[in-house]
Length: 291
Image (cartoon, rainbow, N blue to C red; front, side, top):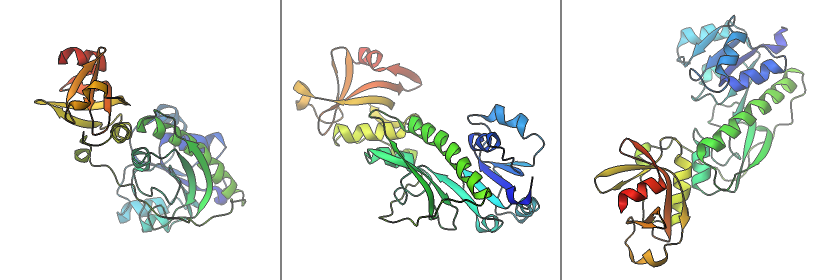
């Protein structure tokens, strides 16, 4: 491979596989985790390449090892940690980010996109920058959010799309035909990692807001609540009319038509998938426990 194509890859297997499918063979790979979609397909294809799994990128020895590969382009596709300046200084870099930048900069944009009730989002490929997700945008592809989509499903769609788009852009950059870079404009919003302890459901809130929290937190770690002495993790449900049960205080469970509901500040929320203690239950099975 010519020096102009010396790609050092950071991130999940799908992005590396997309590069390989386009004839771009990285000089090394830095995995953000062990596993992920495409892991078993990727390993035989890169068995002869230098690889690291979640190394300390601030360690001088690691930086020296990466520098010895003489990269001319860094490609980061859903790498879960911030790449520090000593590594960014090795070469220009590309990053795939699953939000409509500068909205939802940070490590957990999908959670906050759903929690805010956004109707759509975007997949951006940008230049890596020292500031978190501040780099100019090279491509932006809008993605419509499905009406009942969970964070897990949306994240998977965006990660699959991001792998393909960043590989396309990398190919253009290596050919000397980089897309025009566009500075980010508009109000910046931040998407920090959601603390699992902050995902407790407040039943005084409207059912539509609770529904967004549940979908934004599924499948892991899941929004949660207490019913009696039991911890309940809610994985799926949907808003509903409270009807005759409007007289109940928020947070009160009730059964209607064999289905389990909880009263909300506005309306009610029908439970369809949950965990009670250590038991995974459907909504109807849970309803039978309530009567």
